[in-house]
Image (cartoon, rainbow, N blue to C red; front, side, top):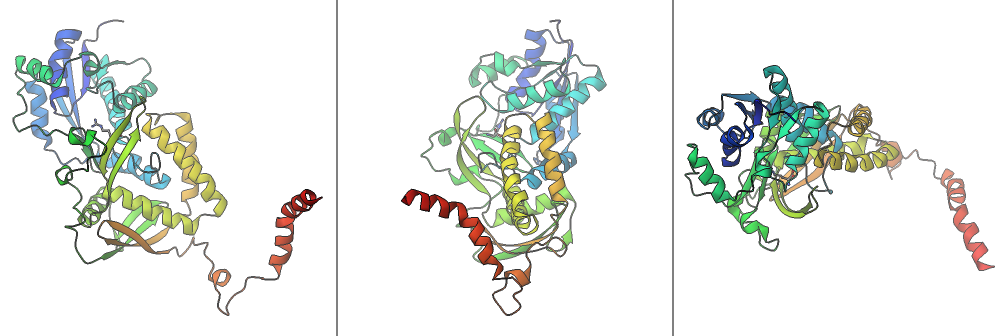
Amino acid sequence: MGQAKKVVLAYSGGVDTSVCIPYLKEKYGVEEVIAFAADLGQGDELEPIRVKALDAGASDSIVGDLIKPFVEEFAFPAIRTNALYEGRYPLSTALARPLIARRLVELAKELGADAVAHGCTGKGNDQVRFDVAIAALAPHLKVLTPAREWGMSREETIAYGELFGIPAPVTKKSPYSIDLNLLGRSIEAGSLEDPMVAPPEEVFAMTCSIAQAPDAAEEIELGFEFGNPVSINGVILEPVKLIDQLNKLAGKHGFGRLDIIENRVVGIKSREIYETPGLLLLIRAHQELESLTLSADVLQTKVQLERKWADLVYQGLWFTPLKEAIDAFIDKTQIDVNGVVKIRLHKGNAVVVGRSSSINSLYIPSMATYGKEDEFNHKAAEGFIYVWGLPSRLWASNKRK
Ligand code: ARG
């Protein structure tokens, strides 16, 4: 295994990834570290982050705007799939990782780097997602993972950084570990490590508390085309804007908070707080539109594949043949998912109160009605039920013998 001379590092601006820069040079013999910071709509100022990497000794520092592909190629497929890991977590962090990995690999090729690097620790899911995605895209590319190997405590990491002019965090360090992007925030650690301690209000930034949410309910209409969200209240919006607006709308009403115990890939359970207002709302609305427009058997089969898709994405298996095959099934089903869903937002709730599809609705009023327009053939039910119930009848009479 030859030494890597030129490395592209996934860079966030935090202490760990900053310390990775001198550490890679000193301990791994890397000559050039090129920092790459991704804009995923997290709202951070990226210019200071770019400069920070140079100050830490990077030979070059690149900021990449990935927000559009993030929404269109990663968030929208998750909405079409109604993807919820373990039935609850909408994968807001997990979805970003294969995209960052893809860009790292592209940059390594463009810049002639012989390795990529990230600052994930050995306990989380993100290391799994980066390493596996990189392996799938560039099987022979080396991945350097200093933070998984250095064995330094947080204090030691800060002290090591100071030796190389990396300033210790000036603001009183928040006890929480936070990841954020346009789709949401995940908050871990600090007092949250006790699963019995309620999350303090200070951990939230995208959603307000139920107490502070407006007293008046607000009704909104979300429009979908081919399973993709396209409009709010009849106004067509481009994907990034749409998610951003929904985050604000749903967040204002206190919708989109999760407090869950989650099973990590590495075998441990962790307590996770999330706020993902727009994404959760879109999934809920999308599920509703599917119940109107997809046949019963397609829905039942899709639900099973949704669960599998969410597992694959959570577990770092984005770039795999199974994931692609499930995508093909999902895409086929979404041709029929066109219409609008009406939702009432109120005090932490998002209640579906209406749905319609002018071309794909399988809800047939003349079949459903109890009024005089009823066209359902009631007499035909008798023969159907006789055959349907025949196995039960035969089994019961046999038992009585
Ligand atoms: N548990 C979530 C996930 O696995 C959130 C991970 C947060 N990552 C982080 N580096 N803070 O997707």
